[in-house]
Image 1 (cartoon, rainbow, N blue to C red):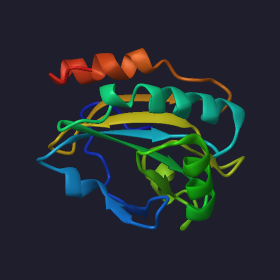
Image 2 (cartoon, rainbow, N blue to C red):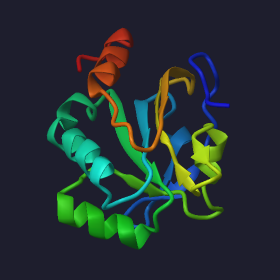
Image 3 (cartoon, one colour):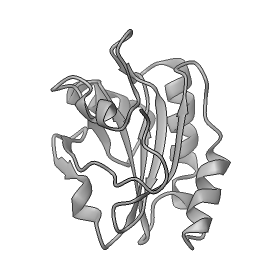
Length: 156
């Protein structure tokens, strides 16, 4: 079951594309966190979505908000993808245990072994304030993320 607004976001620690550990709870009390799950690096829709995010990152990364991407890819694949596309935001590897964080958020597809397109806005207190779950082939509307941030008083 996908997390819903009002749920407490499960804490996690995953390595980013530089193998630096990132823990959700480290942002508690400091920043809202936009968590963007996606199926696979280098795939068409994922590249399109994350390039759009890259191109509008000023709306999603500031003193008030951090944005992180999460997939089951290895840190090496994420590093190559970040370097190729110029992604400067953290891309976290949920590769081992395979898809554990995506499962905790209710966006792991057991049939394919991939994360669905799940998006969660977690406030500074660790509460989910926005969530969406899209099928793998369906791109997301990032205007919805901006509206969710605006509801938290963040100028997005």
